[in-house]
Length: 162
Image (spheres, rainbow, N blue to C red):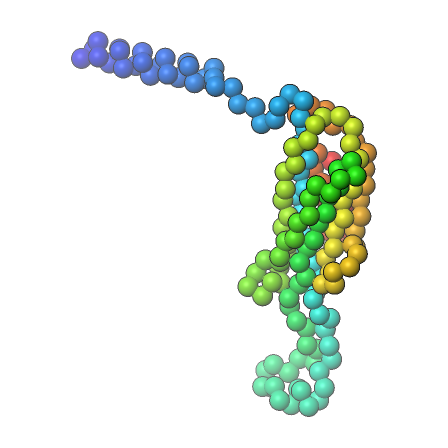
């Protein structure tokens, strides 16, 4: 019984030693870097608030007679990323919530080669389909295994690279 326990504990220790030293896992190859787009933003309303007429107010129950009619639905968030002049990402995120009235979340990982890169990011947070509301560009020199995060600061209306 004691010999059996010694053999069992020895086998367990051997398995732990083997897996503690390998297999080696690498998230990126030695010559690669990572660009992460990580944006949480509340897009603009699809329709602006409108003033209700006295006739419209009269048709409503007394507890619902708000003078302004403000739909809650928000526009989808559209993002485009160019890397060295090539469009590498075009993504649309719908606002959260049953009424599509919450924040939209974008997350994307882009593995690229280490070295110098020109990055351009464009965002649209309104319902029409032409043009973009926010633009950000930078030139970076990514080191091997470096992770660059692209974010959006809603309060400033600025795309940031860090």
